[in-house]
Length: 204
Length: 292
Image (cartoon, rainbow over all chains, first blue to last red; front, side, top):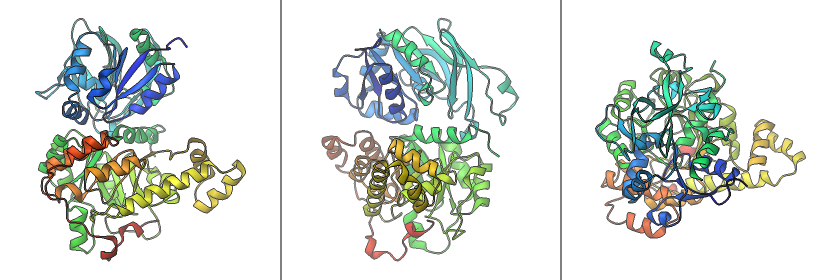
């Protein structure tokens, strides 16, 4: 297997972490769940911050004393794949809120940017270095702005017909900054594995 | 009619709630306490089940204004209940852009035969189920999430445990059936062959399955998670207890680390008074018998 022996930790405090684990395992990586501080005792080649509710995950990270050790690892260059709630955890600023979480990604992200569940949508779209991929947006955020050294990987226009006229402008939904890949959408909900493979290449 | 991907998107939202706790709240203040304590979503309702049970009478959908107040107070998903079969209440909840509708036996049923045709809606539905047949019938009608039908407002976990165990046993039984036996099983369960086939092939429901009804302590939540629940609803258990914020946060952590008894022991310390429970034998009204 090309990805054999890669040790990938998946934050498993809340949300859709099993979906990430299945895809990473199908690609040959060795996957383990991070639920407590002691789970960080082992070697990590990469970290996945899954979708779920960012407020819940942010609180549990602190309650379980995972926050600071993980923040340091990310700041020190550990490859990270963050989807939806995970991207909110990484962003330096959350629009309209004074508090952020890891704040390791120079970007402003807006929570529930497409509205409530009725604004959730599915589309297919180009992602730089990877190609066309399925993109599932669930009460998704998008990036309002990113730092000058952040690479924009994908922009998407909402297909949601209920959305107002501004949805015609394409929003930033995938970015890369050094070791961090952050996505508004959920590659773990579709069978396409190309984004996870791209992440594993970064973790090698 | 809903667009093609809508049902998938609605099942996906339930996936995002996994490993989380969904809490009943009656005011924006309670919603904020729940969110701060780590709720993955809140259920907005005028009266929590324990009070519905105490008050008696007909119980209906909550005031949309009250629900909107809660929507404005938090960033997490907001759910609300409509009566079984009351599709007009569901239409109203969809109109105010609720994130999930619970077609719930906690409210008085509006129809004693038909459930809502949930396939006609864009918003997702969660429904209660005591066994696999009920679960698959609700999924056939368009539910994108299932929960146990533990007896609401009692603080008694026994029914939720019974439903979860029964569901697991029935799924295991279907998985072990020969392919040519699935047609008859579909007939017995009054559901389509395709659904029975899915359960046979995947050894699970095609949607996320949560525990609900009677969860009052971190240990109750851990019990349900170990029995296979993918997350937990807590109704009266939090805001009918002595220290709601502390109890809520403890239940949230117990759901994440549901096999770590040492941690749950610590979480269970000094939680104050738990809600007063009522045993199964002491109640006149079994809400789980509503809607089959």
